[in-house]
Image 1: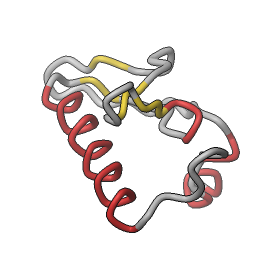
Image 2: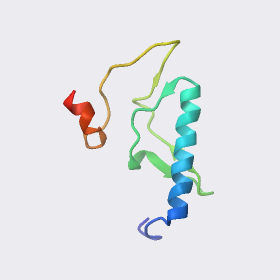
Image 3: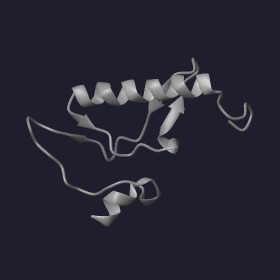
Image 4: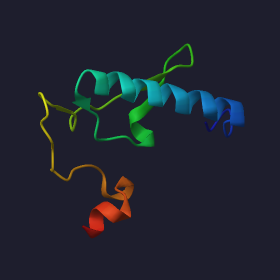
Length: 83
C-alpha cells in the first residue's frame, strides 16, 4: 500500500467480499478463525487475499461452543472486554 496508495472503493468492496467468503468457507468446515487483523491478510500475486496465522484458530465438533478470550488486544471489540 505504500507504493499504490489507499484502495479505491471498488477494490475495498472486492477485498471485503473475499475476506467474507474465506471466513464463510472456514465456518462451513467448523473452523473458527480468531485472529482477523490487517497483518494476517495478505495478497497473492494475482491480487486475491490469503488469510495467515491460524495459531488461534479452533476446530469445533458438533454443537461445541468456545468461551476462551484470545486475540490481539488492539483488535478486540470493546464490548467483549467489558463483559
